[in-house]
Image (cartoon, rainbow, N blue to C red):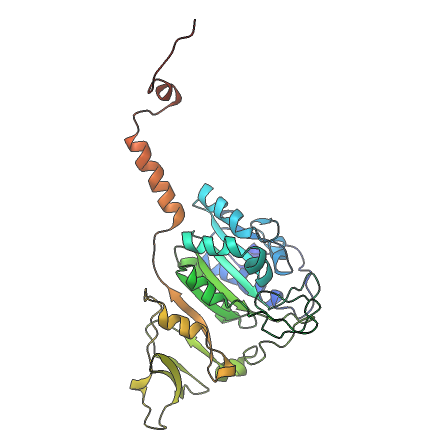
Length: 334
């Protein structure tokens, strides 16, 4: 059966005009239609926050849980019904603060769910407090003199938890979001898709360098497995190795040629280079990496649990409750 985005839509979104959640929701619904998994075989699960209202606008199974517990509920749902496709939607506060412990253990276990991390570096629903991804010195209602904390970098956290899939897109880049969603769904295991988006009320403009299509051409790089890491208006720039790090080269200048440009390997088990790519930023003169940064195969948690159950059942000397009672010592009480 062929599906359209309309098959996954319901309700009227209640977000501020211009919020990145609007852009992302539309792209997610289109991606789901192209993936083609029926709505009745799909569940969208969230925690608490602006982004966590998203399940209300999906014509699928859906559940808004409590703050920070989306990953725990999603894990339970997947283990109980491995045939269900599950999308977890969390903000940077919901997913990485109170939900941080569930986040890292979900990745460590490699549960086959798709985690969408909508990162606007602020608590929007509770009116503008700093979040785990807000930069040091960030002035907010809860840090009027600037934060004195270093932020989490989602890729660094995901890789440290032994995550096997990490990708990134910008909320306003519909084709980029859709390709990332489809890749995350194809991956067997926990996929983490970081979506860069603005909170137009409390943290507007933080991704201005890549929020428009022209900006992404000069300030971002779209990574594709097996292809040279090129970027720029005419792909005139590339990423090359410099010692144990990276550098930007311009083809034709200072002897730089296409042979100097690195090839992206998203499937490498060693995530050293993938980490360097994920942590690049414009402030240091690098493009922001978009697309699939890491995609490595590994056994999934729920498949291993199912196999373990079958193995134990095969070795058991009993197959029903009566046989279980007769397996050990029996006393007759008169």
